[in-house]
Image (tube, rainbow, N blue to C red; front, top):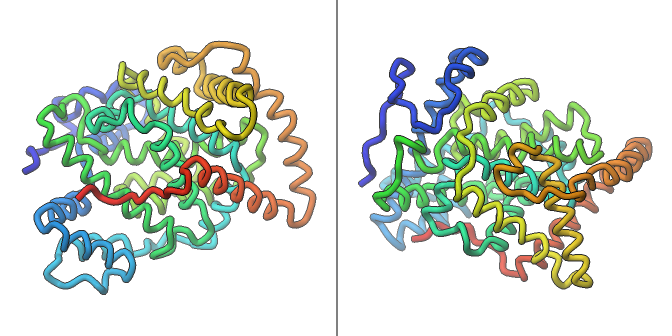
Length: 397
């Protein structure tokens, strides 16, 4: 049985976990939105958590029912399987704000980032997330700090790649299915954290809580496209809105609360919310630095087999230099990122990419071709890194 959650009221400081930093400053800058966001530190995903509890009780039969529901839809779920039916009804209900044509525009824009996008994902999106000590605690509790780092990051990249396929988030397509699977996996991770008896809700909030899930959406959307633009990629306002819409719907499928998702309704709203998140984060700890140190070794591992050893060294140093350039000196110093000349590699990359991007915009069909090439490069590289063994994203039951 799960421990009782702490109820949250704006009037009680004790209702917020200790990770909620700079409270008076953010209340002054953001008004009621500050405490409303912080309340999501103590909220998880009731539908997924109930489904995980049901699957543990029912065993293999429940697992088979879940797999059938993913293949055939909510209509295949028998009435007595209430938890599964409620879960599937929710993920199959498409919100009124979803425009699949817009999502496809976002996917094609995202694909243009190609392998450079995967470097940004690692060097900025993930490392920026590691800067929050509370957000990384589920990885520590599940023993993932020092193990399977290369594989875990490749699986994250596969998730991102499938979400950013055209039509990838339509019902029963691969991106849709992975979002749903990951949502359930998160519920089982929450169970493991609670059952450990060591989870400190008063300090960290719920494991994989709503606020942290929303933060992950911003890392995969806003940080990704901002990093790409800093490197010289050109992304139009319409494409930026489409990328945010793509990840907003991914967030819906992943169980993120509708109020949080409404803050991604426009680029302006998303950036406003992002500023709030940066202010309230608690900063890193030893778990954060351990995760970062492990991640910094992965680019060299990924480069193996693609050329001489010097290539792996160069790729690794480029990645780590870019990480420092994108995260900035304060975060970089706190996480132990190298401080060397490679942080300036961003500038020659931008000098090369910018004119190529200007040329792409002038040639009919070049943007679509760039998306095709970028997408093919990412998927081919992931196949090599995963060694042909695709992640199952299956719940551990």
